Length: 432
Image (cartoon, rainbow, N blue to C red; front, side):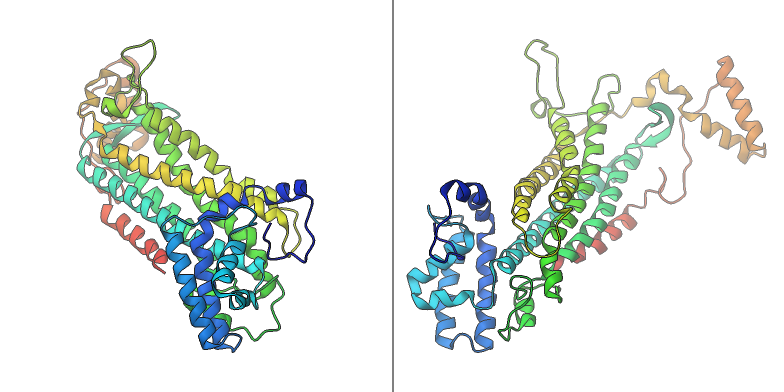
């Protein structure tokens, strides 16, 4: 097997299979990022005199050709080649001979895979942020569209006070805006350049790490080379925590949709083609999409724990344990993106029950409104509370189904624009 670290001897085949695992398959997702890291590294090597102008130009042309292959989805890791790093160097060596071998000067596989992962995570986080934004905008649009449609609010799963669809949709919009605060913090941790830290202790070559930081578009670098290596695992964990926060909100939204589409509630519904049926009950319209989003989101909330347990007892420096994090993180990223996309798609087709409160079981929904009305007329709050409570007890309570909320964030004042500004501010982080 072609390995960057080979010194002539080969490991036992059983050991090799165990240690490589499914890295070759996962590494295909890193291919374009590996090439981009190498493009920056080559330019830096030329700037410090470790590559001639002619050598650098040859390498840059060849790397651009490989990058195009990777971006088209045609990059493969050949049988007998250990990973993406070995494959790229092999392709360069075949094309350029000895010049291809010079690309690894001043670099270790440790900082090479680190920069690949940082570039990969940065791009994936940008994509996730855009999917969250699309869902956020859908929720805000629904919030404004249905801001005057009342629905019951619940505490302890009991009928409580009036709510509205505007309030309900808007709540999830703002919750996602808050999730993105955490996600943006993780993005800042990820968006730092580790290249040049080599195996974790720097290099005696006169590397210019500022050059690669600028070329790769990082906000800054991990300055201390040991800290750069310690960011392996920490960056993934930070991203996972941000993903978990988003998944938590998705989970609650999906759970609400499952409950509210239940016939005993009947608050919302979806077209038949977006639901599933039963093998024996012809009437069934099952909310399988939201059940799966709910379940997948629960799994995603376990991701930080899973990653933490891989790295929790590791001292500083590189350890092969880190390889296992890709097994957890890469599929989780795809799962989150799928859940965000399908949730936004489903909400495009949501149907709202405009007459929920016609059901007599909601007649006590407005008791607080009546207490507040009496209080505004001058009756002490406790007296008003007791009066309405007695009316409920003796069955004489009645009230108009009207609400009078004006304060910020309430039924009559959703602050949709202010919430949009909150999201707009946090989204700027992902533009770098």
